[in-house]
Image (cartoon, rainbow, N blue to C red; front, top):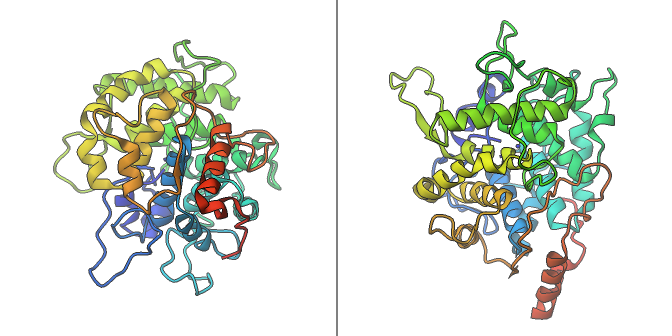
Length: 420
């Protein structure tokens, strides 16, 4: 987030998503499709894409992008075709020949993730801009976004939308709705003040009484959102080395709220043995904490992006040692989350605890058009404050396109600006 969804939570119902369950960027296992269902050839993963098809495709592209992988054209075309004429995305559309209508459940998280992914790939400015226009058109009165159109703002959705808008070049602090609220206003309203045991954390949403409860997943998302960063954020070398602290001074500034959130994440990881835990399932008798691999990876990205890569090192080591089975079971979004965590901290994604994450991610979809070794220096691809959707392309990416063209696949750099 990734900003961030839990496929298991998504599989419940859209009503639950709109009400309370935090849609985290956890690539939890999703149900397998029935044998009679043929999955699209351009789609990543083999499990039922109903609740996470666009999400996992977008995360796969972002992870490939930071590691010098050019995704197959048919995979990119599949993601483009999923967009509705309005610019919005649903979680997954099985039949894109049918236009979106009032019954299509539009998904802000999927839209924001697709915008970020296609912006990083480059050459799809109309698709990106169309998605951004839709996101801006449904901004809530408090300045934020909910998971679906009209649902109350939550930290996760607001943060991932901020990342998409920033990547396209919007100046988040200047982006006010008719009521004068910015997206940062919505995030800051969900920040828990310093001083208590959960000081610095963000809530997903207020409860019915208006109280805020700390949510580590929402906090990881909000740290990125408060800094105007996207899902493929790199480390923040400018402030690296300063210990995170929760401060009440400048609390109205999103930058300080992000540091406060980093303080909470660093403390929570340390208390839990370098990982985050899943909350017990509602109604479950088993309250034994279970490790949350996806949100731990998200916390790593958040800490590194806030300038606290050293505080994320223990979690990176824990993921390297323990995440293999989780990623194998969960599929492409899980591999992508681990790649983004490795990218943000400078770890080797091609030897992550003995696993070549890039090879496994590439194998979950169509064979890439090209694979180029990227620069060893992580970049922040959020492109905040005015860059165009192609400005984040590094030199290695342009070289990769040239190599692809030389190999007889120059169509990769042709304009693919078709509408779905």
